[in-house]
Length: 288
Image (cartoon, rainbow, N blue to C red; front, side):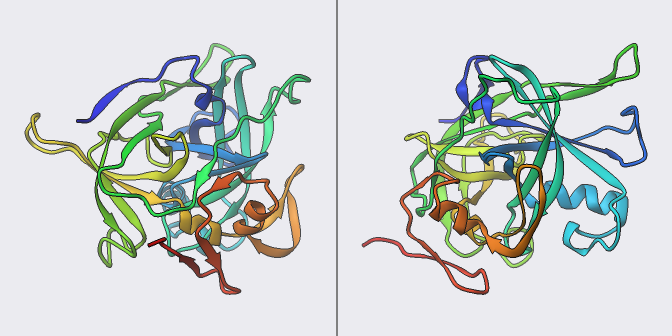
């Protein structure tokens, strides 16, 4: 049985889950703001979201996907969270970690508002589960389907956050891909009702571990029909190539894989059944 409802304001997951908003790079007041989807921190200054969320804005401004852009970007992206103790916090996306074979992308960010991290700020981060999901496994998706944007009386851009969550169970596992065109990557189908704007948000197991990233959803014609949502498995994300470090965000001396951040503990993970070769190909070992 699925359930869709607002998320409690005090939920600690909101300390690392937020909304992505894009705008024209030449727009200094925020008049061109475009809500994109959701995302979540997995390490200090490093967030994950759905690749199609970023590709859609790249297509809008450049007519191509993010990794195909040549030269300066014509757009900028902000990542905003509403922290229970520190209020609204805004981060500017400064670098991308990308692989075209999965629907997950990494974002390197720098703080914009407030100007500095509060003295008592601590990074509250999720733990990833790098195991294969299971049919009938309970899941909970979190995101921002009803976010708004506006300009205040001084012409400053303001983003309104309205987090929601949806619970359900996994109906089917697609170990390699669901198909060759729409979902050609490891994913699973769940009966959790995810809405537009939740794409890129984390999907949790009953243990509280992140096992996926919200992808596509379908609203069926009859209200009594179960919701159908597709979730990108999180385990292939360890093969994402990263070209930056933080903070501040700077170009790394050499590209490296997200797996390295898992290995050194910067990204928390359990059920580590993945291995990555030199080309970034991720292999998942499924225990008998």
